[in-house]
Amino acid sequence: MCRDPRSEVLDPHQVEAVHLYNRTIDGLYLLGKNPDTGEDFSYRQGWLVDKMNQLFAHLCIELLSYGVLSNHYHLNVRTRPDIAASLTDRQVAERWLSALSGQPDKDGNFKQPSEQAIEMLMANKEKLEKCRAELSDCSHLMKQLNQYLAQRANYEDGRRGSFWAGRYGSTRLVDDAALLACTVYIDLNRIRAGLVISHLTSIAVGRWGTGSQRSCERSTKRIRLRRRRWLVGTALICERRVRIVAGCYRSWSLTRRKMR
Image 1 (cartoon, helix red, strand yellow):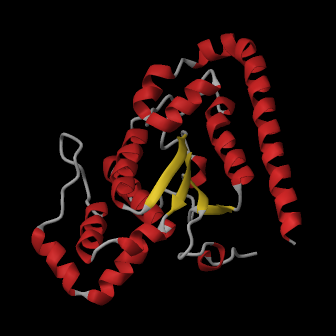
Image 2: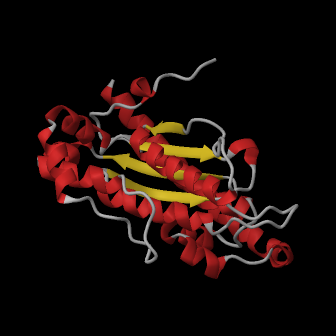
């Protein structure tokens, strides 16, 4: 059964919280270390984080939380079409063109758009309005993010073809309970994969990226030795968070009933 069109799932004119995710083709470890061959592409997670920093600095989309693993990643975002609607024509042109910058320089900075390019886009009113809508569009965000990483990785490997398994997935988070539950899932995802040893490490990686990841990750052998120690603590943390989620859901349900 085919998926519903995104235009019917996400309203481009409403502020919405959305869970976005994508997986590498055939589940290959193209963003991390392959446990079978020992081949390590963990540095590509830094590419993803750098591109995210660039995109979220210019698009009208807020990053709430994220997690990057060896063969997939998750984003929790909030679209802000209200901010896009309040921008001037010049601000729209500058933001949209800045988000399109390709490879970063040796210092990790992406090239800024030229004045000529900004003026040309401002002169095309029809395209400018389309760009305004794309500033708060999840599809535009994921297109820029996935295309950038796929092209850079394929160039490095000297290959062609698909890097991602298919089109990205998206789920609208309809209330606070859904947002909290999804955030907890992303926070604990790296623990379940055996990449970190505590929920605090997982949250640190999810907020600050690969710099914290390098300082917080442990070898697989050490993780196994300490598994019993942190497993009990993680279970208690999960139980507390589940209780919070359940409480939020009950409050939301009662509010819905009163409104009927």
